[in-house]
Length: 101
Image (cartoon, rainbow, N blue to C red):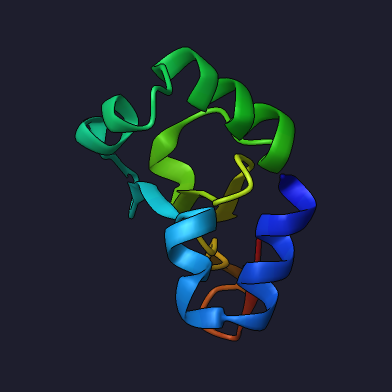
């Protein structure tokens, strides 16, 4: 059956979403979508486990977007961390060093 439906979805791309389903957004900009999690039968514990194992993250607030893919995998894109700039005065009014962390 899997081979048959795989072949059908390959040759008829219009039917692919019907056969395989589509991805669902679980987290967007750090906010968990509990309705989608409930529809997808995913617990918060499962989601946090995926955050740790897939993206090495501990909090949903660190996530730009997390999707439940049609394959059943959870893909996670972390938020981009902008570098912090620290200015250090070496001598009064003479030199300032900028350090990006």
